[in-house]
Image 1 (cartoon, rainbow, N blue to C red):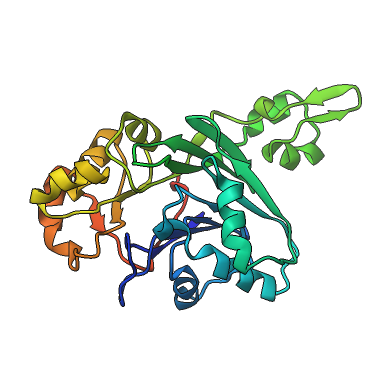
Image 2 (image 1 turned 180 degrees about the vertical axis):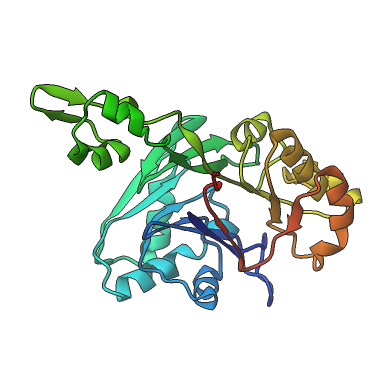
Length: 304
């Protein structure tokens, strides 16, 4: 199960009711942040979640509204006497940008591991989930992310019995372990059926619509996408600044065949995004206006 919270849904500047961009995902005792805009710490506290399990922070790009909350968060984690390593993932220049911000947070009791994205698409295996970064189209180097939980096939009892696999190895095989014992090699594929549908989350902000978004978001259970403008007459402005309108985001959701769309990263001038949702849902019915602390639990599909 993925526990997801949109901590901040604002772009450019924070507002009294809207913090800047950040998403938090919890899985199996581990927490991941995507972006860390101003107000992220407050949003985490308002949600009632903890900073301690955060072990991965991803950055889409290095505009201030996506990273300005990092120094304070690092200090808070350090003041809590954290010693576990923290992994940071982001586009080219990651270590240089973070170290510049750390002028005001120079001493931390935990190590930081930098994993800079070097290709148009790059994949990471972290804490039991699969993370993929993919390049999008902003006025600086920028990436979207997908996070996937895979799900193994069902245990095939008949096969385990037919192959005379000792019962004490069944649970280990179900967990994906290969076992060598008594002159035999037992592999998970011997007792597991076809892989079942997993869970997929896609997140992207600050971009024009791209084929890379459609391709990588395809089949997502939840697609969180920027909608900088709800006003239809601001499409030219969206193009100029390489952002998206609500309607362009909805078209991406439709083309990618996702289950649900949350809009985020609103312009400060957009005070009531829900006013535009009726038109947005004509393009993609399962569209929702994201807001700070909007949350959901994504679980594996139930089986008969």
